[in-house]
Amino acid sequence: MNKINLLDDELINKISAGEVVERPMSIVKELVENSIDADSKNITIEIIDGGIPYIKVLDDGCGMNEIDAVLAFGRHATSKIKSTDDLFNIGTLGFRGEALASIASISKVLLKTKEENSLYGTLINVEGGKILKKVKCGCEKGCSVEVKDVFYNTPARRKFLKRPSTEAMYITDMVAKIALSRPDISFKYIKDKRMEFMTSGNNSVNEVILRLYGDELYSNLIETEYNDEYMNIKIFLCKPSYTRGNRNMQILFVNGRFVKNKIYTTAVEEAYKTLIPVNRYPVAITYLNIDPKNIDVNVHPTKLEVKFSDEKEIFDSIYKSIKNALNRSNLIPTIRHDMFTYADITENKVEEKSNPKQLNMIEEESTNKILEVYPNNKSLVSNVKESSEKAYFDYNDVNAFNKEIENTHIENFNTLPDERDDYKIVGVIFSTYIIVEKDDVIYLVDQHAAHERILYEKFMNMYNNVQGKQTTIPILINIEPGDDVIINENIELFNKLGYKFESFGNNSIILREVPVVLGQPESRQLFIDIIDKLKRDDFNKDINLKEETIIMMACKKAVKAMDSLSKEEITSLFNDLKVTENPYTCPHGRPVIVSIKKYELEKMFKRIM
Image (tube, rainbow, N blue to C red):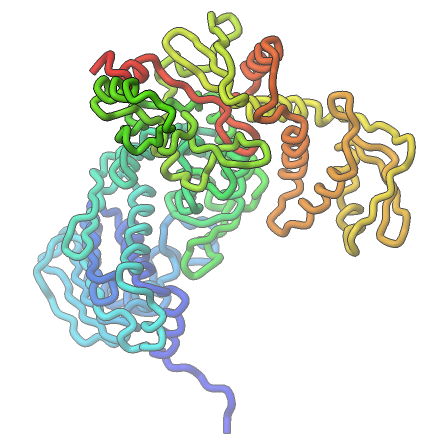
């Protein structure tokens, strides 16, 4: 008896469907991409209960005649390509001819379509991959596809679907990304008989972003563009104060196609590296147009991944574009009146020694209210974390922090005072925050974060000229098994940092020279820390080693919170901060400086209403 069997078309289609149709979101994606390829100007997407029982996509594209409508349900039937050469010059979203066949094999499909000059349209009903009905019908130009009972004939696949609300979330996210990819098309998205959103199709990316993601994200946008002979890049990125808890808003469109690419996310996150806190992710919506011959979209059945012929060029272009845009923008957060809350005076504990008369006077004058900067009388800028340095911002609730901080680059007083400006250093509060007054603005500067930023940029500039200092007594370091391989692979990087060493056998090395920074030799611990960094699987040594090493040095050498500084030291610190490339955050991404307008203070004290 034969062991090898030829599979029939029905089973082949179901296997193919497993690659193309992972969930209802995959169906919506494939159908909407077909509508876009048909030159539609208006596309309506409707789903019920996460798309499991019902999906409908309606467009006003070119439509199909009766013959093409039948062929469209065949495997590998497509109008997009004809030869192998076409695979290397793909200008459409679809090209394999698998979508409708795969969808129809695991659901019940009703197709209505009509070409512009036809007297009538075509209706085709398909269930489980079999055409049950084909008749002429009356319909508008374009195409309407209804999909019912997804995975009805493959219960094993259906049981792996999430709850309808979760499946709907996947669909909503995908439709939003497709709408972003084509601002020139009007998209209408209806979920459970309720309009979720509609775009105008006026070709304005800004309008689509505002409609989809709201005013808070939109108000933090920075636009930048890059062009050369190989590519065109347009990026809509958010200021570092507006971050997300995952990478979902790092969106890349390549030639109008939404794709996922690790080179892209790495470039985006490296550009923001010293500007945002750990475990927060930047927002960047990027449109990359490139010669189709320089990319491969035929990597995965879902077409969500692409390969670039020159990944380094892509990385460098995106990284530099974002970095330059951020450097050109003002990023000082402003504290507003609406960030402050009022609390009952009775909530605040008063010592028994307090004079009852004085307390009564306070109550009468404030009508039982006091202005509370933050609950529990915490610091003006943010809740301060109890740490060894006692000055780091608490980012446990970063979303709340981001809602409270507003960036602006429109008003001139939000820029850092220039050296020639008439500013006054008022003093220091909590032995940590320097108060600076200029015109109608008060600036609060975190002395540790400011010094970290200053040292970081100094060390970065010194990096290529770091000098090693020969040790009086060679330093013996014991390393872990396998560390010698990492060290030998990165000798050039260690040399650039000022280290000279040699193997001493038995998992030991001897340091002959160590780097000298600001006149002081660096400790052996830094060498071990660098090895630990290089061990990380997600560590990109070409990008990260220099920066992370210098961040460690800057943090260790910077003045700490609670350190007392003289007036001259404070003035010097502030003047040094003003000439840094990025005075807004420390290398770890925490704010260095925030501003409070006189207007906000006057509103607080009810001088103006």
